[in-house]
Image (cartoon, rainbow, N blue to C red; front, side, top):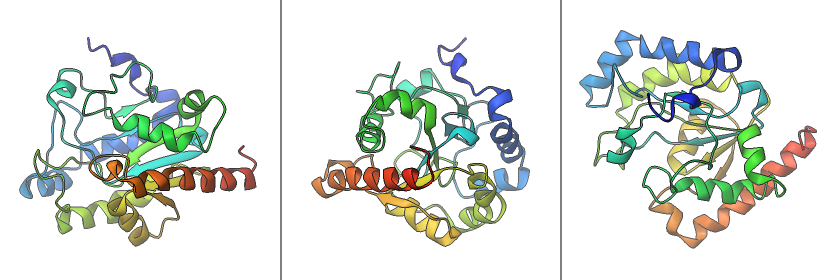
Amino acid sequence: MSKYACLAAPRETHGVLLDLHAEIKNDSAFKELCLYHGLLWEDVGNEPRGYNGPAPNDVQVLYVSAEPGPVTPTERLNLLPAITAAPWLDGFDLSLPEHYWRKNLESICKSIWPNDTVANMDKHLGGMQSFWISLPEGATTKAIPRPVLDYWRQIYAHRLFGLFPHAVVLAAGKKAQDRLRRLGIDFVGCGAVTKPGCNFKSVKDSWPRAGKQISNLLKQTDQL
């Protein structure tokens, strides 16, 4: 049994997400389209993926990036389920290429929840991508093929975001922000928390600004 098995999202709290993921997983037309365009799909594994965080109704901030990165060799040894309720930092080796970005996400959250930041992340932060299929290794800077992305937008994107009725959306990086604009979804934007963008000072400076903006929005809705 994987050491991450206990992090699988429970049905009693995450049922709506699990049901929609099962629908995506069983969508033969979407699978065929992804495979035709060279995207990854695993009948056993975590593609398509996914979401991490508390139950959708408890999410105050929904962190959205572009798409999942390719599975790294160390990640392959302990694949997380596609829908998880894992802690954001505890238990992860933040030196690994699949986890370093979590500290950058914490930097943003310190401006949202300055007290008990990590505990509040686990309690109120959800995270997912604007598209749920990884690009192949070595193709992470390329755009998702248009037919695949159009299908995703038309069938699944609005339904997914509609599951988070109380959340302020935090879009990290230009690609995620452009996709949300096309969908007409309101968001607070910041620079990417992943490489190479996260190494630039201008990007790092955008994180606390976004966090403070989200903090003000949560205060307006009495969530802080």
